[in-house]
Image (cartoon, rainbow, N blue to C red):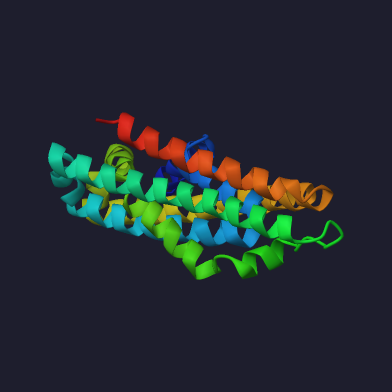
Length: 224
């Protein structure tokens, strides 16, 4: 079992790192604003589930082997970037479909609420799977875990792989808590803006597509 002071020190660092603007928190916020808080939480659950893979790989030393191979590292990065660009394309396609529907509808036709839009679009399980793919296809997460977790491992405290698994579980728990708060706040903001003007739905979709494309570029250009 990890010492209490070690747990407190790790959680303090983990929460600070999770709150920093980064791909995951931007992803959760974008989904929550453009869809709903429940959508953001579903994505957050997927992202945290993906951390199980990275924690297991880091504890087993497999991540170090993969990351030491430039070809394997670039391949995983390319797959992750392609998936992000696919998500950007889907967001833009959604805008075009909505524009077509609005031109056909009369001006007096009421716009669907955020919950109805979510029901007509992607289901929560699909968003959960999206979060898992986002996490597992990002080799930077493995690199991050390999750099962070060993700093809080004490060989005298017992099995090193077991300590890394425990630290990974703590990181997942705090990340889910932080992401849930972000999703709730962002979902409230998105709902408020969409209630004021239906045009915000298209604007959120554009912002979502830009975020996906930006994350893809960032994944490809950094950490080579």
